Structure formats: structure tokens, C-alpha cells
Length: 226
Ligand SMILES: Nc1ncnc2c1ncn2[C@@H]1O[C@H](COP(=O)(O)OP(=O)(O)OP(=O)(O)O)[C@@H](O)[C@H]1O
Ligand SMILES: O=C(O)c1ccc[n+]([C@@H]2O[C@H](COP(=O)([O-])O)[C@@H](O)[C@H]2O)c1
Image (cartoon, rainbow, N blue to C red; front, top):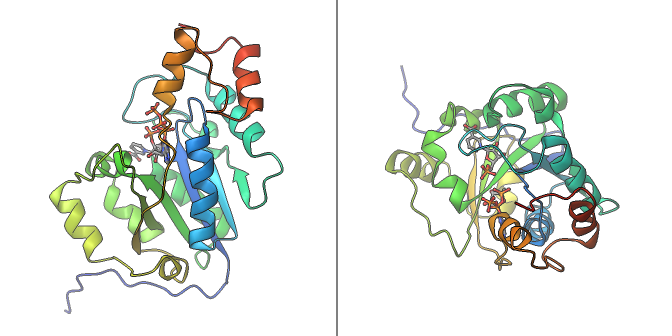
């Protein structure tokens, strides 16, 4: 039997490409949103879906309820071409494992659509702790987004695994249905949800860190005040 070091990669023939950008989005901010636009343009995907995590597996309970985080994402991208919200993780109980989400997405999209999961370097550094992480690559491509404030420090097994799947250009990812890996360097806005929650808890303004409609939602619902 022939052993293969890289998985067999199908070349997409549907022409359709979708990327998902999952997060706790507690709350969504301009760092996420600006990156979402740039990712969409760099990959040339038909749509980029922002996917709020219902029960983030590797962190504590979010400050806002899932439906509130979803509502803020919805409001933030309303009318923006090519960006969509995907609320499917709110329909599942238990930890929101990405591998389950990808299986579900494959049921919706079929096997011929190019599907890419986007993750920042903070998330990537923890990839070895994700549920069944190797299977992510048989279901989707992975796009790593460098974040200046989170230098790359991935586990050795993960590093070797992705090295064997690396493509040289962003467009190389969307040419594949799954199994590819690409690193994207973006100029990012140094904004984090943690900082936003801290500002709100100490009564400071978050204006211009989030879209006005998100700031208004947070104020109306009295979120993150303690
Ligand atoms: N400023 C930013 N620019 C680009 N990507 C970001 C930025 N902030 C977070 N991300 C990425 O967005 C995804 C979701 O992040 P998340 O919802 O945890 O936001 P966060 O701001 O990092 O939140 P927290 O401070 O609560 O950890 C992750 O892949 C993360 O790396
Ligand atoms: O599948 C997993 O085991 C897993 C573990 C940690 C994080 N994730 C996903 O990674 C995304 C970013 O998570 P977070 O906690 O950085 O907001 C979000 O979509 C999570 O559901 C997924």
C-alpha cells in the first residue's frame, strides 16, 4: 500500500467558494470587520460568513448571551456585500466544536464547494487542543491570520501537519475544496473584545472601536457594565 504524506485534495469544480470566520464576538468589533473584508478580497471568495460560537470550547462563559452576540454581528454587517452571518452554532447544545460545524456546512454546501476556515494566530496556537483538529483539513482549507499581538507559537505536530498542506498563494486555497493551508499577513487594527469589555466596565467610551449600531445595542441592553 502506498502511504501518502498529504491528503488527496479534490479540485473544486463548482466554482463556488465560502469562507467562515468563527469567533466568540463578545462583542464583534472593527478589528474583526476590517479583517473580514480584507480576507474576502484576498481569497476572492463568494461569501465570508461570520459565525458566532454558542459555547466556545476553550474559554469561559461569554459576557453576552449567544443571541445578543449574534444580533450584534447581524447588525454590524447589515448591507455589506459578501459578508453574511451564520447562526448555526446556536442551534447545537454542548461545546461549539468547529469540526461539527464543518460537517454540518458540508451537508448544506455539498462536497464540491471550496470551504475555508479562518483563524487568528491566537486561535491557531491552540489548534492542537481543538476537537479532532486533523479532521478540519479533510473538511475545509485553513487560513491563518497573523495577529501582531499574538506571535506564532503553534505546537510542533500542528506545524508539521500544516507545512505539508501549505499553498503558495491565497487563490490556491479557493482552488481546493479542502486540505490547503495559507498564511495571510494583514495590517490589523489592534482592537480586542477583552479591551472593549474592560472599557465598558470602567465607564469609558468604545465609540469607533465598534460600529455605531453595535455601540448602541450594547448601551440599550446594558451589556458588559460589570
Ligand atoms: N483585531 C483583530 N484583527 C483581526 N482578527 C482578530 C482581531 N481580534 C480578534 N481576531 C480574530 O477573530 C477571531 C474571533 O476572535 P474573538 O471573538 O475571540 O475576538 P477577540 O477580540 O480576540 O476576543 P477576546 O479579547 O474576548 O479574546 C479569532 O480568530 C481572532 O484571532
Ligand atoms: O473545535 C474546537 O475544539 C474549538 C476550540 C476552540 C475554538 N474553536 C473555535 O475557534 C473560533 C475562535 O474561538 P475564540 O474562543 O478565540 O473566540 C470559534 O469559532 C470557536 O468555536 C473551536
